[in-house]
Length: 393
Image 1 (tube, one colour):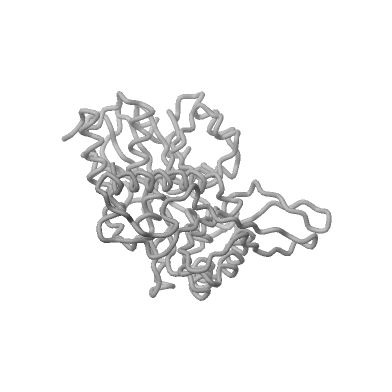
Image 2 (image 1 turned 120 degrees about the vertical axis):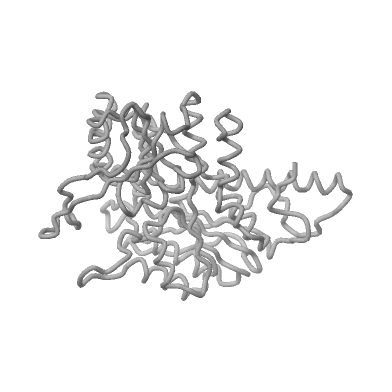
């Protein structure tokens, strides 16, 4: 069948190109494959209807742009575009959290940091000077955890957004931003913050098709106040109860760049005998998620599934291995929006959530200047999923 996000009276604004930085090539390759398939289906439908799209570059084998960011021996870098982008609609994809990429500085080996990736992003934007339009897909928003000023601090996320906006970028697409209000720094350009809610719910069903979605068997838990909107949305769509934790911190000291957490306090209905889905945006060190899991187990929770859009595990995997072995957690769901180590992918408790098709829908819609409202709100898709699994309310 034809893809709903194309055809009709809407032509692409320009030929499509996806500029995938080295940090994001695996994800970009999957996105490209989906778009190729979308448009092949479109062409078949148009031929069936004896119509012709009459648009150059609509049906090609790949939309990936030949580009790279090589470095000199001093560590300085540059962007190189291997083909013309004149008049094209360029979507630059970057994963600022991919620390697996090394480069050499005067004989010493460094690994790419978020700052290095952000500089490469700006280099690619700077090289696309003749493009019709430049859009940025940055799943993990650069410096999004430094989104507000609580004392004499820099506002790094806002400054980064202003930089790319000043370079002429027209749209910025991100996922599950730590605080989407940072878009106030760039009110005159497009800023879309998407939540892969449906993809996580679908993955949960895929992992455990026998899970019961009702108030007697499942609860959604918010790990803190900041994740409340995500948990409320999930609970309302699934028709289950929710609870939340709030973090009591020691504001008299700063350790590792943050005020240490003194305790997690639970507010909500009883979790005794129920499966629990803890929905968060990021697992960084993982300490908070494990503290919550142990607290929920003490209150009689049956199985605990941890959900994080970005499963980063800065402190390694040993603590989660132990928690899984002890029966504290039943599984962790994390997206492929950022780098996952081979060790993480090999763990029996980790379940990857593929968001590439979701991104392909956005790119297809934006390239045709179509509304993305239906993509943003997955309510109907979640409802259809519950009906297919016999759990519609």
